[in-house]
Amino acid sequence: MRMNSVALPLAALLAFQAAAQPAAAPAPARSSAEIVAAAPASAWARVPDDALLVMDLANGATVLIALAPDFAPAHVRNIRALAMARWWDGTSINRVQDNYVVQWGDATEKKPLPPTLKLPVAMAYERPLAGLDFRPMPYRDVFARQVGHVGTWPVAVEGGAAWLPHCYGMVGVGRNEAPDTGSGAELYAVIGQAPRHLDRNIAVVGRVVEGMEHLAALPRGTGALGFYEQPAQRIGVTRVRLAADLPAKERPAVEIMRAGTPDLDAWLTTRANRKDSFFIRPAGALDICNALPPARRVPAR
Amino acid sequence: MRMNSVALPLAALLAFQAAAQPAAAPAPARSSAEIVAAAPASAWARVPDDALLVMDLANGATVLIALAPDFAPAHVRNIRALAMARWWDGTSINRVQDNYVVQWGDATEKKPLPPTLKLPVAMAYERPLAGLDFRPMPYRDVFARQVGHVGTWPVAVEGGAAWLPHCYGMVGVGRNEAPDTGSGAELYAVIGQAPRHLDRNIAVVGRVVEGMEHLAALPRGTGALGFYEQPAQRIGVTRVRLAADLPAKERPAVEIMRAGTPDLDAWLTTRANRKDSFFIRPAGALDICNALPPARRVPAR
Image (tube, each protein chain N blue to C red):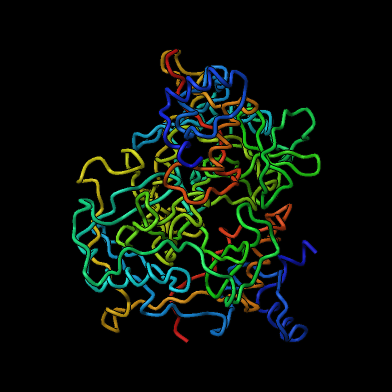
């Protein structure tokens, strides 16, 4: 079985599948990369243009963030309003704390917020599980009763509530001590081991789907909490737009593999049970933070 | 209770403890930083000079790595021999894969290994739990039956075996497909969400105890697996020594908080139940990869 798991070339596997498994059975012998490459268009959900944030940095990097209105509707509404008001243009990345977060916004904390924002945003860091097509993974989690996926999102579940976990690449709303102080203007992305203790204490509003490597490789700040001590160390945020607000030909098109498809099921099973020739002992388990569904630019079809 | 947890200044707390809790009770009202600052010398174990690797990079950074001979004795023997032979001097960091690992060694893969190495190293990616003073944490783990600490190390346990988990900052031995091909010359440090699927598939030999922020902020390689595509992108490794092999006054002195002390117990409890005024809902749980015992330079006493 170990032998079979690595010996078949992809073409042979696909032929075998077509002949013997026309239905939805996962194919654990394929690598996760092969599963992604072979997944049909129906396995992917395009990120809506009004839920894709395009952030250009002064160092030339672009970061794409998918927003999660189903999990943080009020915060996402404000984030859209901030982007439409071009509020982030000319702000900066001010904090890079190793093994924790990269945070951006107005370094002066004095820039007036646009009048289109609805403030304060009531604390709403989880939502009812009811109404969601939750697909649990059969693996333990340290912090929640169950973890799995809803649509294109990793989700943690407990006691009838569902929330987006603080995984590497997830984006949240910075706030002060009072729970309703997160306007959406101050955002952060997780760049280290998942700080899941923040779950249900902060609004998670999305996920970096392209450009994480640019955020995670920024020099760490040497001030308290990783803030840059010198203004010159900050990285300029030159422009933040919703994709919907960009000219059509400049709009990036991103898609994410959907839960409930045989492709994502196969991808998850393969990630939990790596059987290529390198592995002596497949884990038989998968952390939700190693199970963010594959995201990519929409290919020509 | 929420109020009490943040209102008492440290001095008052310590006085209260001295009066009312002379024994070993954890003090959940203190922050983890306060627990570290107040821990007595007896709470700390100094990393032995022959188990501390000092790695100087061409960009001016120094990285300190504590070695774990109790968990990977044969690999640590080879790593000591490589450092004594000055084998890494003039090698480089060749691979930086986002959310995964930074890897260093001989980019040519042709540099002869010193004759003092014992090769091949038999596969030994776990050890018997028996004989270890294992202190379990009362929280779930995704990958192992139990997790906790032995001495200064995070440890995963299942079926009578114990091993070091692949957490952010842990250091492992690169190898080829055959399990006995990891000489110790090719090392990596984890820079993202814990790739715990590597547990028991690779030798974990230590932990970066200072300088992680320099490794984790390196530009990501754009080649397959994050290898740098141009030789000029590699970061030179100018010198790697055991602290024991440095002149006494150049030797860094590092200590790590020990399991089985009231201080580490309190630190773990506090990390699992954050009650400062920011937190609405303490997690009541802690991932072993967020529970690497505090490490620091030995202070003047």
